[in-house]
View 1 (cartoon, rainbow, N blue to C red):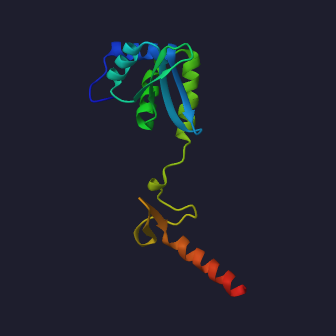
View 2 (view 1 turned 180 degrees about the horizontal axis):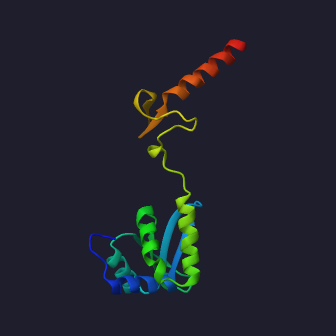
View 3 (view 1 turned 45 degrees about the horizontal axis):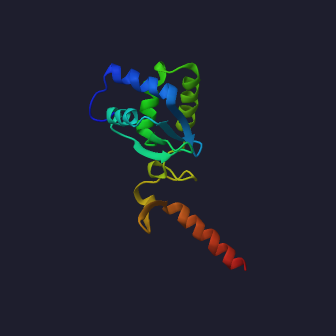
Length: 159
C-alpha cells in the first residue's frame, strides 16, 4: 500500500486494530470508507505511518478527551485494504466487508469511462465531442445532440 511492502507483522497488527476499533462502511450507498477512531494518538499515528495513506483528524469528545481518527475514502486503496485484511477478520467484520465490496462492485462506471452513451451510440471518433462547462470538460454524444435538435424543431413547428 504505500511504496513499501508491508510486513506480515504489520498486516496482522492493522487487522487486529481495525477488528477492535475500526469501521468498514459505505457512503452514498456505494463509496467505500474505512475509519479508525481512538484516544491513543501514538497508535493512530503508527497506523497511518504503516499504511502511508488516508487522512488523520482529531476532535474533542464530550468527556473532554481528544479522539484521534484516521479515515480512508480512496476507492482503490480502500478496496485493496479490505481484500487484504478480509481473511484475518472475524465473522461480523468479514460479512460487513463482503457487503461493502458487493455494493462497490455494482457502482456504475464514471462517465469518463463510458464507451457508449445511454442510448447506445458509441462515444468515439466523429460521434464524440468534448464540451467545456466551467472547469470541467464533458464528453457528449453528437448523435444524441442531433436527435434532441430534431425533436425540438418538430415541436416548434407544431406550435
